Length: 105
Image (cartoon, rainbow, N blue to C red; front, side, top):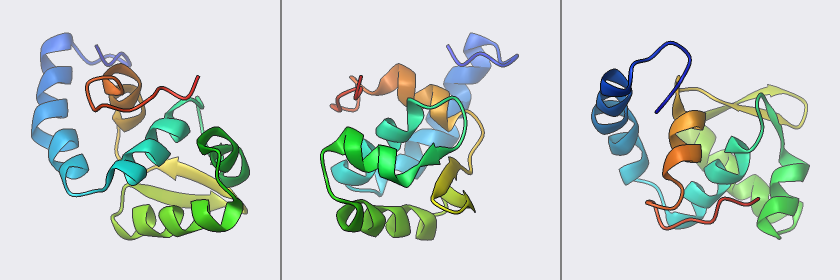
């Protein structure tokens, strides 16, 4: 569970105390957007996220704005997005199925 020097016990605590509550208030489409981002090991391109979701750029940009407003992601360059919360990428990779979301493989 959540590598990067975090023990499984602490990883579960981070997930249950921080990450799960942060994801609780967003829509399924928002969560799908985040799972699509989690495929990348670093910043994601908005165009690639749209392709993974099977939507056009305008549609994807609306969810990008919502997630930036929710402070779950940030713009890190032209057309590039990254997670703002440590371990969120790993949490989403490990829990996509439990969240009822496809892994967008």
